[in-house]
Image (cartoon, rainbow, N blue to C red; front, side):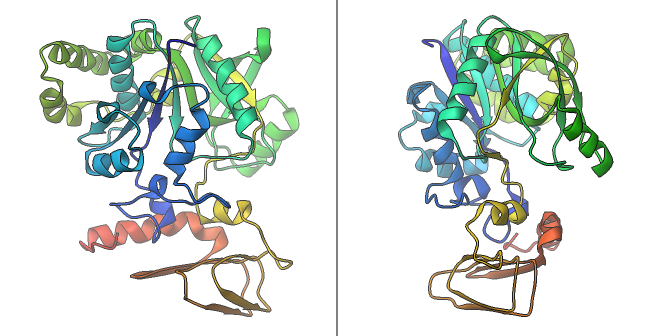
Length: 356
């Protein structure tokens, strides 16, 4: 599509991947996908290049990460890296990017993608993205729903409604993360999909929806447009961005919209949410150990090990551990509690420790 654009959300801090992920070099800038030495951000950009030329790819990140992001994606025009002075969740991020795209192309159609997902089937992924762009080009708000493979409690869900043409459905409703029993019911029902956090819309369509459901954000974006016409957008963004509502595009707009369409997809998707997910995706030995380092495992099973080159890690008589060694920090945690690693980062930040 001649008027297709991509917006990649890359402002996260990746605290659940500490100690590999740090404030100065978080998750999206690291090669965390199994068998891939590219950063997650670069892999995301390269996956979509057959659909969107590099000059129409935007990345929204934090001001603190803007230079590192620009260096990682040196082929992007520097003005395509939008630096948020402060994180305000995804609605301001998407709204600012949409305003930027609309100024450039009033008929621009956007795909909005997280920077830190792993995709096992890139061709199948691109086929779904094409469907999303086509549906959004007609003015619809569109999302991608992942066909579930297990009763997952860590994801939100979408209930799928009637089928329209070309594999697109109406979405009946968004559902918050369920407990185990509800997740099992969703899987058995067969008409619930995981909410992937990927979206498609015309820039003017999502800005109209923001105007309807988040009028305060819409007013600020209008001021950004006026400032851009004067060449003063950067100054206004720096002074006003912290005042924007901290709300997700899901809660703030998509769940309130009169109609949302969903494209079901099954392309080896993972949100790479924690070290547990990294273990699930990695190659394993006969004892289910994922050893991404020089390691000796004696009577050990279900473990994940990552360490610097030249460091030998020995496991004896342990099960289901995550062991991640870096030059200045070592993490050891039961695999089932890997989501709680963010608590370590919170403690370090509270104590003013630079290793957070």
